[in-house]
Image 1 (cartoon, rainbow, N blue to C red):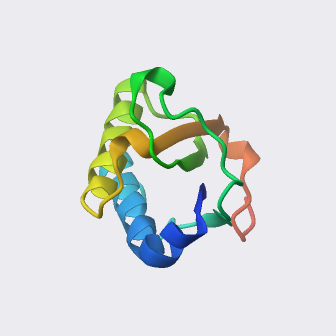
Image 2 (tube, rainbow, N blue to C red):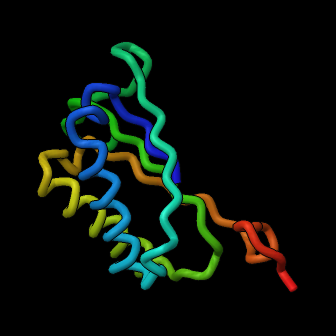
Length: 118
């Protein structure tokens, strides 16, 4: 998973953002709690460019979350996961309108996580 956000937001809430997203994946997808791999990419002012009104929302900042996962979940499950992430981050002060969440999917054969496939 890659999370792009303003550096000051990461400094203030990075650990809470990490925990909130991870717990949403555990709860929403039934993911193993030890399956936590996150890359925070922090940015200085002016490095994240976005349209504040795109898709009819009132966007004040942008937190972009890209989730890499195996193609195995249905649309309803993915939408529920999006809602879980938005809810958990809203609890720590990040507005749902400020989120952009996307999924990149591939197959089981496309992964190596530090041990043999045999």
